[in-house]
Length: 453
Ligand code: FES
Ligand SMILES: [Fe+2]
Image (cartoon, rainbow, N blue to C red; front, side, top):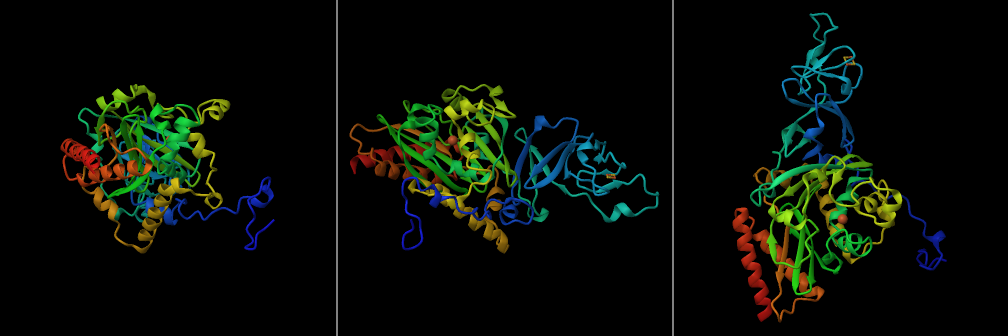
């Protein structure tokens, strides 16, 4: 059953010869302390809890393979400490928040939010024990209705990024949400680098989860941006051209349009419906969390209610385990696709095609960034983040095609989409409103030039 080179022939009923090979190298997926990807991920701020989830009691959290406890002390300051007390290991989730810091329940040691040991009350008054030791602590920030942590070297801590989409278009309100995915973080990120799945999973195979326009097969492209790349699909939907270009922001951030645009009316927006982080809890579990952007543009496409978002809900079918198993089988969604790939998908068992170019690109960028951190090369991304608000590139366009337009086949659609995306990138120095106007004019000119050409 084997060919000259030892490979099994692809014949019918040949499962015996095609059993999955051993697990792939997990270097890109591992997130714990001291791992290659884990060290890279530790150069960024990650959200890990909604502000509304932290009340008067401490909360136990797992983040990048570390067990931690977050709390608010009685004076309102946030602390994020290693979970186990450095005295004899009791969990600080049973600690009592004090006016300053948190007191371990077991023997009363008091820790400040930065990990300083303030009191060791059972020790003699002259004891110096507390001066030479410290409870592990990390900086934590509260923003956009979420709590963010930075688990990297303190001397390399970047500013917490604020994205231009958070205040554009005017009147945007951010509503936070958090979902739990019991699988490795990378396969959730790869879902966003794979825009062809929107046609199949969200329109053709599972039934209509996105608008009917998504059932039209698109030209795919992956256009580099200063933050990563745009994962984009360009379609011809009747007499309109329809671009959906999602931000892939290294290492784990995505920005997306709603998926509800039916491409029947003209529109152009450099903004997003959703900003999400894929936050690794450990190698086998992740949060899909972030904010939905409520404004006139997003509301007109997908009239959403604010209470559709929060812990375990994001206002779209198939994003959680929270449906009967049979219903998930009949109409699977992103959760079912990603989690069913396995706790850690075995990449050695995959057969990539031309539509997987975005997945390959993401893995390449991730690999390069990991090596840069390993070598101690200065990392470019935190530098970009230092300028707030950070310019982003997610956009959505529906333009009516001129009557004799020759845009229509996959090749011409792809070329148009790429050029339009480049114009969105080229205008990133402009304020958001002006940028949208200027980019729209240029893209319209491109459409007419194409007609002449
Ligand atoms: S274990 Fe925390 S004070 Fe003893
Ligand atoms: Fe999806």
